[in-house]
Length: 218
Image (cartoon, rainbow, N blue to C red; front, side, top):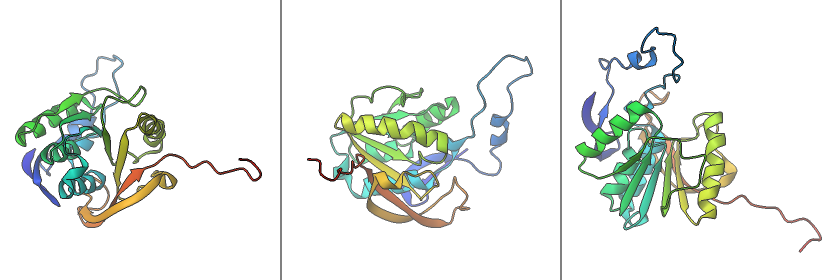
C-alpha cells in the first residue's frame, strides 16, 4: 500500500492499493483446516470510492457542517470521510467499519493524517445510533442487502434528532425518494467501475419518509 493524497481530496492522504499490492490474497481462505470462518470481505477500504470522496470534499469545503460536532462515519472503509470531518473541525469522530483489515487501515490512515478517531469494529446498524450529532454515510448503498440494513438505522438516527448526509454517485440501490440534493462534484470513482475517471457524484440530506394525507382526513 502506498501513502498518497486522495484524488479530488488532496488534504487527506491514505494508504491506497496499487497493482503490486497483492490484495487478492485477502479473498483467499486463511487455511484448509475445515473450520467455519467468516466469508472474506473484498478490500473496499483500500480505495477511495466516489461517495466517500464527494462527501469528504463537501465537508472540507463547508467546515461549519461539522465544526464542534460529534460525527459518525458510517461504513467508514478507509476512513476518508471521518478524517475529512476531523480535519474540518469536528469535536469527535467515530468510524464504524466491520472489516478487520479495514479497521487496521483506518487506524493507520488516521495516524498518517494526524487526527484522532474512535474506531468501532462491529456492525452498529442493528442497534440504536451512538451519541452523535451528525452521520456521514459515503457509498453505503452499493448492494441491496446493505441498503436494506442502512435505511432503518438512518431512520432511527433521524428519530433521535441526528442529521444524516449521504454521499453517492448514483448507485442502483440509492433510496432516491428519501434524499434531498445538497451539492454535486465530479470526483474519480477509484474503487468502483469508473476506472478512476471523474464522474458526477452528489451529497444528499437523508430525510424522513413523507406520509401522504388521506383525502377527507385531518
